[in-house]
Image 1: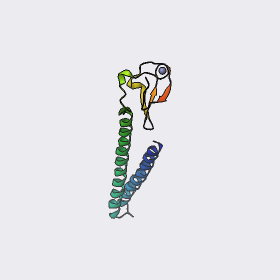
Image 2: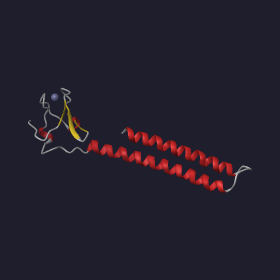
Image 3: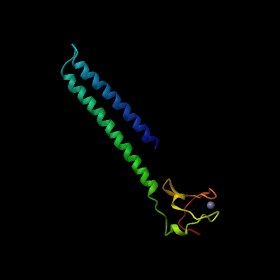
Image 4: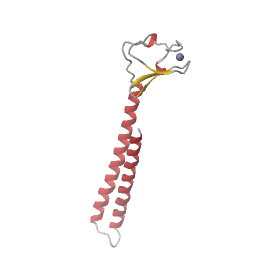
Length: 125
Ligand SMILES: [Zn+2]
């Protein structure tokens, strides 16, 4: 997660530098000491910066989507039926809201006694 954020920040910084120098080159091309060829360099640099911004945005959105999939797509081990799920320690009926995926394993957080434990293959309730 932190890697994603760092990559996004680095991407934006690189893009900002490219766009900044790109604009400077285009601007410089119109000055007395500038050359028309600078417009091409400026456009390439600015375009590259915009591509990076676009790519980072899309990549970040994809990362958010995939993490949401992990949260909502809960694969219950074995043939655990949601109707018969009860808390190990207090026996309270658990809903799907009580289950969350932690490091790829389904974790139960009981809303009644606030016990947190991993859902196992062999439910004893
Ligand atoms: Zn409980």
